[in-house]
Length: 295
Length: 167
Image (cartoon, rainbow over all chains, first blue to last red; front, side):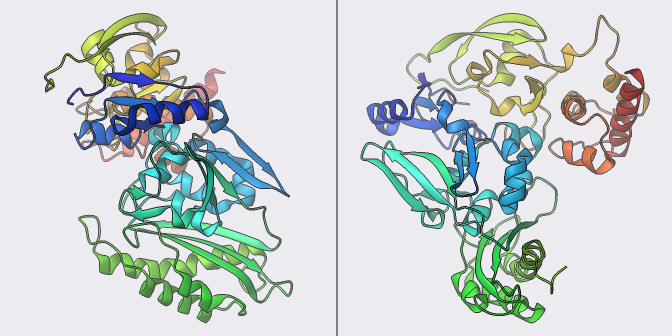
Protein backbone atom coordinates (compact mmCIF):
# COMPACT_ATOMS: atom_id res chain seq x y z
CA UNK A 1 0.00 0.00 0.00
CA UNK A 2 1.42 3.39 -0.94
CA UNK A 3 1.94 5.43 2.22
CA UNK A 4 0.22 8.75 1.70
CA UNK A 5 -1.26 9.40 5.13
CA UNK A 6 0.76 11.88 7.14
CA UNK A 7 -1.95 13.02 9.53
CA UNK A 8 -4.56 11.38 11.70
CA UNK A 9 -7.06 13.43 13.65
CA UNK A 10 -9.67 12.16 16.07
CA UNK A 11 -11.84 15.11 17.14
CA UNK A 12 -14.18 14.67 20.05
CA UNK A 13 -17.08 16.78 18.79
CA UNK A 14 -19.01 17.01 15.57
CA UNK A 15 -18.16 20.70 15.21
CA UNK A 16 -14.53 19.80 15.78
CA UNK A 17 -14.72 17.24 12.98
CA UNK A 18 -16.24 19.81 10.60
CA UNK A 19 -13.48 22.31 11.47
CA UNK A 20 -10.73 19.81 10.85
CA UNK A 21 -12.28 18.82 7.53
CA UNK A 22 -12.56 22.47 6.50
CA UNK A 23 -8.94 23.01 7.49
CA UNK A 24 -7.61 20.17 5.36
CA UNK A 25 -10.02 20.39 2.44
CA UNK A 26 -9.56 17.83 -0.28
CA UNK A 27 -6.55 16.26 1.44
CA UNK A 28 -8.74 14.75 4.14
CA UNK A 29 -11.11 11.82 4.22
CA UNK A 30 -13.57 10.97 6.96
CA UNK A 31 -12.83 7.63 8.61
CA UNK A 32 -15.85 5.91 10.16
CA UNK A 33 -15.56 2.13 10.59
CA UNK A 34 -12.98 1.87 7.84
CA UNK A 35 -14.53 -1.23 6.26
CA UNK A 36 -14.89 0.51 2.91
CA UNK A 37 -12.29 3.27 3.14
CA UNK A 38 -9.41 0.98 4.07
CA UNK A 39 -10.20 -1.27 1.11
CA UNK A 40 -9.99 1.72 -1.25
CA UNK A 41 -6.79 2.84 0.43
CA UNK A 42 -5.16 -0.57 0.00
CA UNK A 43 -6.23 -0.72 -3.63
CA UNK A 44 -4.70 2.68 -4.29
CA UNK A 45 -8.07 4.16 -5.31
CA UNK A 46 -7.85 6.83 -2.63
CA UNK A 47 -4.76 8.63 -1.40
CA UNK A 48 -5.74 11.03 1.37
CA UNK A 49 -2.99 12.70 3.36
CA UNK A 50 -5.19 13.20 6.43
CA UNK A 51 -7.65 10.79 8.01
CA UNK A 52 -10.32 12.37 10.22
CA UNK A 53 -11.69 9.66 12.45
CA UNK A 54 -15.15 10.02 13.98
CA UNK A 55 -14.48 7.32 16.57
CA UNK A 56 -14.22 9.76 19.46
CA UNK A 57 -17.38 11.72 18.68
CA UNK A 58 -19.47 9.94 21.24
CA UNK A 59 -22.78 11.53 20.27
CA UNK A 60 -22.54 9.70 16.94
CA UNK A 61 -22.60 6.32 18.65
CA UNK A 62 -25.99 6.43 20.28
CA UNK A 63 -29.37 5.02 19.35
CA UNK A 64 -32.43 6.61 20.92
CA UNK A 65 -36.07 5.72 20.50
CA UNK A 66 -39.47 6.73 21.71
CA UNK A 67 -42.85 5.75 20.28
CA UNK A 68 -43.68 9.42 19.72
CA UNK A 69 -40.35 10.66 18.32
CA UNK A 70 -39.23 7.58 16.42
CA UNK A 71 -35.59 6.55 16.30
CA UNK A 72 -32.38 8.56 16.00
CA UNK A 73 -29.33 6.52 15.03
CA UNK A 74 -25.88 8.08 15.26
CA UNK A 75 -23.80 7.65 12.11
CA UNK A 76 -21.11 5.68 13.94
CA UNK A 77 -23.49 2.96 15.17
CA UNK A 78 -22.19 -0.35 13.83
CA UNK A 79 -24.10 -2.90 11.74
CA UNK A 80 -23.64 -5.39 14.59
CA UNK A 81 -25.30 -3.02 17.05
CA UNK A 82 -28.25 -2.58 14.68
CA UNK A 83 -28.48 -6.33 14.12
CA UNK A 84 -28.61 -6.97 17.86
CA UNK A 85 -30.95 -4.15 18.83
CA UNK A 86 -34.30 -5.38 20.15
CA UNK A 87 -35.86 -1.98 19.49
CA UNK A 88 -34.76 -2.02 15.86
CA UNK A 89 -36.04 -5.58 15.44
CA UNK A 90 -39.42 -4.72 16.90
CA UNK A 91 -40.16 -1.41 15.21
CA UNK A 92 -37.90 -1.20 12.13
CA UNK A 93 -37.50 -4.85 11.16
CA UNK A 94 -36.26 -4.14 7.63
CA UNK A 95 -33.23 -2.26 9.00
CA UNK A 96 -32.26 -4.98 11.47
CA UNK A 97 -32.60 -7.59 8.73
CA UNK A 98 -30.51 -5.51 6.33
CA UNK A 99 -27.77 -4.86 8.89
CA UNK A 100 -27.62 -8.59 9.67
CA UNK A 101 -26.68 -9.51 6.09
CA UNK A 102 -23.97 -6.94 5.49
CA UNK A 103 -20.83 -8.97 4.72
CA UNK A 104 -19.50 -11.13 7.56
CA UNK A 105 -19.48 -10.68 11.31
CA UNK A 106 -15.98 -9.17 11.22
CA UNK A 107 -17.14 -6.36 8.95
CA UNK A 108 -20.35 -5.81 10.89
CA UNK A 109 -18.42 -5.43 14.14
CA UNK A 110 -16.61 -2.35 12.82
CA UNK A 111 -18.65 -1.14 9.82
CA UNK A 112 -20.98 1.77 10.56
CA UNK A 113 -24.40 2.73 9.26
CA UNK A 114 -23.15 6.20 8.32
CA UNK A 115 -20.11 4.87 6.52
CA UNK A 116 -22.24 2.39 4.61
CA UNK A 117 -24.65 5.11 3.49
CA UNK A 118 -21.92 7.56 2.48
CA UNK A 119 -19.96 4.93 0.56
CA UNK A 120 -23.08 4.60 -1.60
CA UNK A 121 -22.51 1.18 -3.08
CA UNK A 122 -25.78 0.50 -4.94
CA UNK A 123 -25.66 -3.12 -3.78
CA UNK A 124 -25.42 -2.21 -0.10
CA UNK A 125 -28.27 -3.42 2.11
CA UNK A 126 -29.03 -0.73 4.75
CA UNK A 127 -29.83 2.08 2.26
CA UNK A 128 -32.68 0.06 0.73
CA UNK A 129 -34.13 -0.56 4.19
CA UNK A 130 -33.79 3.10 5.11
CA UNK A 131 -35.64 4.13 1.95
CA UNK A 132 -38.50 1.76 2.79
CA UNK A 133 -38.61 3.00 6.38
CA UNK A 134 -38.81 6.65 5.33
CA UNK A 135 -35.49 7.70 6.84
CA UNK A 136 -34.23 11.26 6.93
CA UNK A 137 -30.52 12.07 7.10
CA UNK A 138 -29.12 14.79 9.33
CA UNK A 139 -26.04 16.36 7.75
CA UNK A 140 -23.79 18.80 9.60
CA UNK A 141 -21.32 21.10 7.91
CA UNK A 142 -19.82 24.60 7.84
CA UNK A 143 -23.19 26.04 6.79
CA UNK A 144 -24.95 24.34 9.70
CA UNK A 145 -27.40 21.45 9.80
CA UNK A 146 -29.59 20.23 6.96
CA UNK A 147 -32.06 17.38 6.62
CA UNK A 148 -32.53 15.25 3.53
CA UNK A 149 -34.79 12.29 2.69
CA UNK A 150 -32.44 9.35 2.38
CA UNK A 151 -33.34 8.54 -1.24
CA UNK A 152 -32.30 12.07 -2.29
CA UNK A 153 -28.79 11.59 -0.88
CA UNK A 154 -27.57 9.18 -3.56
CA UNK A 155 -26.36 10.81 -6.77
CA UNK A 156 -24.55 8.05 -8.58
CA UNK A 157 -22.39 4.98 -8.06
CA UNK A 158 -20.31 5.80 -4.95
CA UNK A 159 -21.41 9.45 -5.09
CA UNK A 160 -23.54 11.25 -2.53
CA UNK A 161 -24.83 14.73 -1.89
CA UNK A 162 -22.28 15.70 0.74
CA UNK A 163 -20.94 19.23 0.63
CA UNK A 164 -17.30 20.04 1.45
CA UNK A 165 -16.50 19.38 5.10
CA UNK A 166 -20.03 18.04 5.64
CA UNK A 167 -20.58 14.99 7.83
CA UNK A 168 -23.52 12.62 8.04
CA UNK A 169 -24.40 12.87 11.72
CA UNK A 170 -27.59 10.92 12.29
CA UNK A 171 -30.26 8.83 10.62
CA UNK A 172 -33.80 9.62 11.74
CA UNK A 173 -36.65 7.15 11.45
CA UNK A 174 -40.30 8.18 11.85
CA UNK A 175 -42.36 6.91 14.80
CA UNK A 176 -43.72 3.41 14.19
CA UNK A 177 -47.13 3.65 12.57
CA UNK A 178 -50.07 1.53 13.73
CA UNK A 179 -50.73 -1.60 11.65
CA UNK A 180 -47.30 -1.47 9.99
CA UNK A 181 -44.87 -4.16 8.94
CA UNK A 182 -41.53 -4.19 7.15
CA UNK A 183 -39.02 -6.70 5.80
CA UNK A 184 -35.74 -6.94 3.88
CA UNK A 185 -34.96 -9.80 1.51
CA UNK A 186 -31.61 -10.22 -0.19
CA UNK A 187 -30.65 -12.45 -3.11
CA UNK A 188 -26.98 -13.31 -3.33
CA UNK A 189 -24.94 -16.43 -4.02
CA UNK A 190 -23.11 -16.73 -0.72
CA UNK A 191 -23.92 -15.26 2.64
CA UNK A 192 -22.03 -12.03 2.98
CA UNK A 193 -21.85 -11.24 -0.73
CA UNK A 194 -23.13 -7.92 -1.98
CA UNK A 195 -26.74 -8.06 -3.11
CA UNK A 196 -27.57 -9.29 -6.58
CA UNK A 197 -30.96 -7.82 -5.69
CA UNK A 198 -32.25 -6.62 -2.34
CA UNK A 199 -35.81 -5.56 -1.60
CA UNK A 200 -36.97 -3.66 1.47
CA UNK A 201 -40.69 -3.13 1.93
CA UNK A 202 -42.77 -1.22 4.45
CA UNK A 203 -46.56 -1.20 4.54
CA UNK A 204 -49.24 0.30 6.70
CA UNK A 205 -52.71 -1.21 6.60
CA UNK A 206 -55.83 0.92 6.69
CA UNK A 207 -58.09 0.52 9.71
CA UNK A 208 -60.10 -2.13 7.87
CA UNK A 209 -56.87 -4.16 7.69
CA UNK A 210 -57.70 -4.99 4.09
CA UNK A 211 -56.50 -1.99 2.15
CA UNK A 212 -52.85 -0.91 2.01
CA UNK A 213 -52.95 2.66 3.21
CA UNK A 214 -49.27 3.38 2.81
CA UNK A 215 -46.31 1.64 1.18
CA UNK A 216 -42.62 2.27 0.53
CA UNK A 217 -40.12 0.09 -1.29
CA UNK A 218 -36.33 0.34 -1.34
CA UNK A 219 -34.21 -1.58 -3.85
CA UNK A 220 -30.60 -2.66 -3.76
CA UNK A 221 -28.73 -3.82 -6.84
CA UNK A 222 -31.38 -2.28 -9.05
CA UNK A 223 -29.51 0.72 -10.39
CA UNK A 224 -26.44 2.86 -9.97
CA UNK A 225 -27.87 4.02 -6.64
CA UNK A 226 -30.28 2.55 -4.08
CA UNK A 227 -33.70 3.08 -5.62
CA UNK A 228 -37.24 3.86 -4.63
CA UNK A 229 -39.62 2.55 -7.35
CA UNK A 230 -42.37 5.11 -6.92
CA UNK A 231 -44.61 3.83 -9.77
CA UNK A 232 -44.71 0.42 -8.11
CA UNK A 233 -45.81 2.02 -4.84
CA UNK A 234 -48.50 4.09 -6.56
CA UNK A 235 -49.96 0.94 -8.09
CA UNK A 236 -50.57 -0.48 -4.63
CA UNK A 237 -51.47 2.44 -2.40
CA UNK A 238 -55.14 2.45 -1.34
CA UNK A 239 -55.94 -0.97 -2.74
CA UNK A 240 -56.88 -4.19 -0.91
CA UNK A 241 -53.90 -6.47 -0.45
CA UNK A 242 -53.93 -9.51 -2.72
CA UNK A 243 -51.47 -11.86 -4.39
CA UNK A 244 -52.37 -10.37 -7.77
CA UNK A 245 -51.69 -6.86 -6.55
CA UNK A 246 -48.32 -7.86 -5.13
CA UNK A 247 -47.35 -9.58 -8.38
CA UNK A 248 -48.27 -6.46 -10.33
CA UNK A 249 -46.20 -4.42 -7.92
CA UNK A 250 -43.24 -6.70 -8.58
CA UNK A 251 -43.64 -6.21 -12.33
CA UNK A 252 -43.81 -2.45 -11.89
CA UNK A 253 -40.75 -2.38 -9.65
CA UNK A 254 -38.79 -4.48 -12.14
CA UNK A 255 -39.80 -2.11 -14.95
CA UNK A 256 -38.75 0.90 -12.87
CA UNK A 257 -35.21 -0.22 -12.18
CA UNK A 258 -32.06 0.17 -14.29
CA UNK A 259 -29.71 -2.46 -12.89
CA UNK A 260 -26.01 -2.57 -13.64
CA UNK A 261 -24.45 -5.39 -15.63
CA UNK A 262 -21.36 -6.61 -13.83
CA UNK A 263 -19.37 -9.74 -13.02
CA UNK A 264 -21.70 -10.60 -10.12
CA UNK A 265 -24.91 -10.63 -12.14
CA UNK A 266 -26.41 -9.43 -15.38
CA UNK A 267 -28.88 -6.56 -15.51
CA UNK A 268 -31.51 -9.01 -16.75
CA UNK A 269 -31.03 -11.29 -13.77
CA UNK A 270 -31.08 -8.44 -11.24
CA UNK A 271 -34.32 -7.16 -12.74
CA UNK A 272 -35.79 -10.66 -12.64
CA UNK A 273 -34.92 -11.06 -8.97
CA UNK A 274 -36.50 -7.69 -8.15
CA UNK A 275 -39.68 -8.95 -9.83
CA UNK A 276 -39.60 -12.09 -7.67
CA UNK A 277 -38.55 -10.54 -4.35
CA UNK A 278 -40.88 -7.53 -4.22
CA UNK A 279 -44.05 -9.62 -3.75
CA UNK A 280 -42.27 -11.79 -1.17
CA UNK A 281 -41.04 -8.83 0.86
CA UNK A 282 -44.50 -7.26 0.70
CA UNK A 283 -46.12 -10.52 1.76
CA UNK A 284 -43.93 -10.72 4.88
CA UNK A 285 -44.54 -7.05 5.65
CA UNK A 286 -48.30 -7.52 5.32
CA UNK A 287 -48.20 -10.50 7.65
CA UNK A 288 -46.29 -8.46 10.18
CA UNK A 289 -48.76 -5.60 9.78
CA UNK A 290 -51.57 -7.98 10.72
CA UNK A 291 -53.20 -8.50 7.35
CA UNK A 292 -55.74 -11.36 7.58
CA UNK A 293 -55.02 -12.24 3.94
CA UNK A 294 -51.30 -12.84 4.59
CA UNK A 295 -50.61 -15.07 7.57
CA UNK B 1 5.36 -4.77 -1.58
CA UNK B 2 5.35 -1.24 -0.27
CA UNK B 3 6.12 1.72 -2.49
CA UNK B 4 7.32 4.96 -0.97
CA UNK B 5 6.44 8.48 -2.01
CA UNK B 6 9.12 11.11 -2.52
CA UNK B 7 8.63 12.70 0.89
CA UNK B 8 9.42 10.80 4.04
CA UNK B 9 6.39 8.97 5.38
CA UNK B 10 5.23 9.90 8.84
CA UNK B 11 5.95 7.06 11.16
CA UNK B 12 4.36 7.12 14.53
CA UNK B 13 4.78 5.31 17.82
CA UNK B 14 1.88 3.15 18.86
CA UNK B 15 1.25 0.98 21.89
CA UNK B 16 -0.63 -2.25 21.31
CA UNK B 17 -1.95 -4.73 23.88
CA UNK B 18 -1.68 -8.14 22.26
CA UNK B 19 -2.42 -11.38 24.09
CA UNK B 20 -1.99 -9.65 27.42
CA UNK B 21 1.40 -8.12 26.61
CA UNK B 22 2.30 -4.54 25.74
CA UNK B 23 4.16 -3.89 22.50
CA UNK B 24 5.58 -0.55 21.37
CA UNK B 25 5.65 -0.33 17.60
CA UNK B 26 6.93 2.40 15.30
CA UNK B 27 5.12 2.16 12.00
CA UNK B 28 3.56 4.36 9.31
CA UNK B 29 0.45 6.19 10.42
CA UNK B 30 -1.71 4.18 8.01
CA UNK B 31 -0.22 0.81 8.93
CA UNK B 32 -2.87 -1.86 9.21
CA UNK B 33 -3.16 -3.92 12.34
CA UNK B 34 -2.17 -7.03 10.40
CA UNK B 35 1.05 -5.33 9.31
CA UNK B 36 1.85 -4.33 12.89
CA UNK B 37 1.18 -7.87 14.10
CA UNK B 38 3.06 -9.74 11.39
CA UNK B 39 5.87 -7.39 10.33
CA UNK B 40 6.62 -5.48 13.52
CA UNK B 41 5.66 -7.75 16.41
CA UNK B 42 6.36 -11.05 14.64
CA UNK B 43 3.00 -12.69 15.33
CA UNK B 44 2.37 -14.33 11.98
CA UNK B 45 -0.70 -16.36 12.90
CA UNK B 46 -3.02 -13.83 11.27
CA UNK B 47 -2.75 -14.23 7.50
CA UNK B 48 -3.05 -11.63 4.75
CA UNK B 49 -5.54 -13.26 2.35
CA UNK B 50 -7.40 -10.66 0.33
CA UNK B 51 -6.93 -7.22 1.89
CA UNK B 52 -10.63 -6.59 1.30
CA UNK B 53 -12.38 -8.14 4.29
CA UNK B 54 -13.83 -10.99 2.24
CA UNK B 55 -11.75 -14.01 3.28
CA UNK B 56 -11.38 -13.65 7.05
CA UNK B 57 -7.86 -15.12 7.13
CA UNK B 58 -6.72 -11.99 8.97
CA UNK B 59 -9.34 -12.29 11.71
CA UNK B 60 -8.25 -11.30 15.22
CA UNK B 61 -10.32 -10.44 18.29
CA UNK B 62 -10.64 -6.82 19.41
CA UNK B 63 -12.05 -6.77 22.93
CA UNK B 64 -13.30 -10.27 22.22
CA UNK B 65 -15.06 -9.42 18.95
CA UNK B 66 -13.88 -10.79 15.61
CA UNK B 67 -12.59 -8.15 13.21
CA UNK B 68 -10.55 -8.13 10.03
CA UNK B 69 -7.07 -6.93 10.95
CA UNK B 70 -6.57 -5.96 7.30
CA UNK B 71 -9.37 -3.43 7.70
CA UNK B 72 -8.22 -2.04 11.04
CA UNK B 73 -5.68 0.73 11.44
CA UNK B 74 -3.03 -0.25 13.95
CA UNK B 75 -3.29 3.20 15.56
CA UNK B 76 -6.99 2.64 16.14
CA UNK B 77 -6.37 -0.70 17.84
CA UNK B 78 -4.58 1.11 20.66
CA UNK B 79 -6.36 0.93 23.97
CA UNK B 80 -8.16 -2.26 22.90
CA UNK B 81 -7.39 -5.87 23.86
CA UNK B 82 -6.09 -7.65 20.79
CA UNK B 83 -6.19 -11.44 20.76
CA UNK B 84 -4.42 -13.43 18.07
CA UNK B 85 -4.26 -17.20 17.60
CA UNK B 86 -0.98 -17.18 19.50
CA UNK B 87 -2.83 -15.95 22.55
CA UNK B 88 -5.19 -18.88 22.93
CA UNK B 89 -3.10 -21.65 24.38
CA UNK B 90 -2.27 -21.68 28.08
CA UNK B 91 1.35 -22.70 28.53
CA UNK B 92 1.17 -25.06 25.60
CA UNK B 93 -2.23 -26.47 26.56
CA UNK B 94 -4.55 -25.96 23.60
CA UNK B 95 -7.76 -24.01 23.89
CA UNK B 96 -10.80 -26.34 23.51
CA UNK B 97 -11.60 -24.80 20.13
CA UNK B 98 -8.04 -25.35 18.91
CA UNK B 99 -8.09 -28.94 20.15
CA UNK B 100 -11.45 -29.64 18.52
CA UNK B 101 -10.22 -28.33 15.15
CA UNK B 102 -7.19 -30.60 15.37
CA UNK B 103 -9.10 -33.68 16.55
CA UNK B 104 -12.09 -33.32 14.23
CA UNK B 105 -10.06 -32.85 11.04
CA UNK B 106 -11.01 -29.21 10.69
CA UNK B 107 -7.47 -28.30 9.57
CA UNK B 108 -5.87 -29.16 6.21
CA UNK B 109 -3.43 -26.57 4.94
CA UNK B 110 -4.05 -24.45 8.03
CA UNK B 111 -4.13 -21.09 6.29
CA UNK B 112 -7.71 -20.24 7.22
CA UNK B 113 -7.43 -21.89 10.62
CA UNK B 114 -6.31 -19.03 12.87
CA UNK B 115 -9.10 -16.82 11.53
CA UNK B 116 -11.67 -19.63 11.74
CA UNK B 117 -10.77 -20.43 15.34
CA UNK B 118 -10.93 -16.81 16.42
CA UNK B 119 -14.24 -16.29 14.65
CA UNK B 120 -15.50 -19.38 16.47
CA UNK B 121 -14.20 -18.02 19.79
CA UNK B 122 -16.09 -14.80 19.13
CA UNK B 123 -19.28 -16.78 18.45
CA UNK B 124 -18.99 -19.00 21.51
CA UNK B 125 -18.37 -16.06 23.81
CA UNK B 126 -21.74 -14.62 22.76
CA UNK B 127 -23.62 -17.85 22.11
CA UNK B 128 -22.22 -20.87 24.01
CA UNK B 129 -24.63 -23.35 22.41
CA UNK B 130 -25.03 -22.35 18.80
CA UNK B 131 -27.10 -24.29 16.31
CA UNK B 132 -25.47 -25.48 13.11
CA UNK B 133 -27.12 -22.60 11.28
CA UNK B 134 -25.72 -20.13 13.79
CA UNK B 135 -22.23 -21.63 13.47
CA UNK B 136 -22.36 -21.35 9.69
CA UNK B 137 -23.57 -17.77 9.88
CA UNK B 138 -20.85 -16.81 12.34
CA UNK B 139 -18.16 -18.32 10.13
CA UNK B 140 -19.56 -16.96 6.86
CA UNK B 141 -16.85 -14.29 6.85
CA UNK B 142 -14.12 -16.94 6.78
CA UNK B 143 -13.29 -18.81 3.56
CA UNK B 144 -11.67 -22.25 3.43
CA UNK B 145 -10.40 -23.71 0.17
CA UNK B 146 -9.54 -27.14 1.54
CA UNK B 147 -12.06 -28.70 3.88
CA UNK B 148 -15.49 -27.98 2.44
CA UNK B 149 -16.38 -26.58 5.89
CA UNK B 150 -18.16 -29.66 7.28
CA UNK B 151 -15.44 -30.67 9.70
CA UNK B 152 -14.93 -27.06 10.70
CA UNK B 153 -18.58 -26.81 11.68
CA UNK B 154 -18.28 -30.16 13.50
CA UNK B 155 -15.24 -28.86 15.38
CA UNK B 156 -17.07 -25.76 16.58
CA UNK B 157 -20.04 -27.84 17.70
CA UNK B 158 -17.83 -30.31 19.56
CA UNK B 159 -15.90 -27.45 21.16
CA UNK B 160 -19.12 -25.81 22.35
CA UNK B 161 -20.26 -29.11 23.86
CA UNK B 162 -16.93 -29.61 25.61
CA UNK B 163 -16.89 -26.09 26.93
CA UNK B 164 -20.45 -26.52 28.17
CA UNK B 165 -19.45 -29.70 30.01
CA UNK B 166 -16.42 -28.02 31.55
CA UNK B 167 -18.53 -25.42 33.33
